[in-house]
Length: 387
Image (cartoon, rainbow, N blue to C red; front, side, top):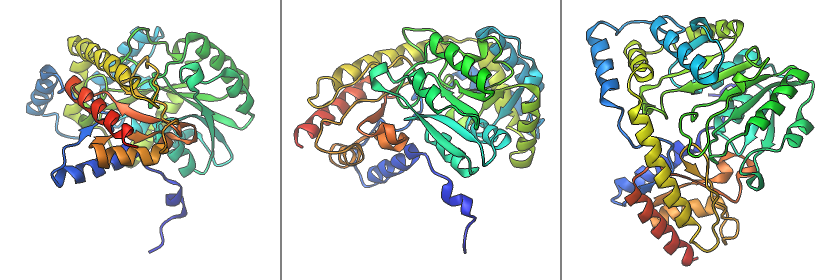
C-alpha cells in the first residue's frame, strides 16, 4: 500500500534506534554500558510519585481540559514568571504529553510550505524532521566547537531572510551541552524584531546548568510577543516516562496549540498533571542533588576522554551530554559508534545523526553512574588503541 508522500520526509530520533540495538545485544547476553539515551538515571522523587497516587485516588483519572488542568497551568505560569522575569498568565500555558508535541504543534501552527525555519545543527533531530514533514525549508545554523558549540551571530545574519518564519533555539543544547550567552540572545532578539520572525526557545535543560546561570530570550524586551517557550518535567525531575511538557506562548498561538491538542491527544493525563503541580511547588532538593551528581560525572567523563589519543572533548556548560571530537581516529563517527557498541559494549551516538555539522563527533550521555562511566572510558580507550 502506498503511503502519503509526506511520510518520506519524516525522520527519526537516533537515540531510540541505538538503544534498541543495544538492547538486542543485551538479550544475547552481552553487557552493554548505555551512554546513548538522554534519560536521567535517577528515580522520580517519592513525593512526586505519591502525589500521582493520591490524585488517582481522588478521581483524577478522566479527561482534563485540552490545554491542561487550571492548577498546573497556574503553577507553570508562576514558575515561568519568577524564573524568566516576565508576567505570564495561566492562559498563556498549554500542557502537553511531553515536550516533543510543542515542537510539532508549533511548527504545524506557524509554518507554511513557502516558509523557512532556521534550526541548530548539530541539533535535536526532531527539529529538522518536522520542518521537512510540513514541507518548509529547513535552514541549518552551524554550532561550532571553536566557539564552545554556540553559533556565530554573523552566520545567523547571513541566513535570515524575508522568508524566515521561525528560529529554533536550544540552550543548554542537545547534543553538545553548549550554552548561548546573554549577548547572543540580545543579538538574536534584535534580528527577530527586525525580520519579524518567531522564536521557539527549547529550554528543556534550563535547570541542568553548572558554572553559569540560565538566560532566556523570553526575558528580553519585545520578545514575549514572538517567543514560544518549551519546557517540561522529563529532564529536571527525572520524569521521562510520565510524558509531561508545556508551552508558554502568546495567547493567539496558545489557542492554535490547544486546537491541535484537541485534534490529536485530547488532553494530557490528569494524575500526571497533578504530580507536575507537586514537582514545581514543593521541595527542589532532588533537582539540586541530581545536578551536582551530573557535574561530577561530567568532569570524570571529560577528563577520561581527553586522556585517549585521537579524542578531544570540551567541557559542556549544561545538559548531560559531552560531544567529543573523534575526527582524528581512522573510523568516521558512524563506523566508530558501531565499533564501540559491537567491540567494546559501549553504546554511544554518532554526531552525524544530529546533522551535517555533527560529523566527526560522538554524543555520550553521562546520565549514568560514575562506576559505569569509568568502565566505559576504559573500554573505549582499549578499543581505540586496537584500531
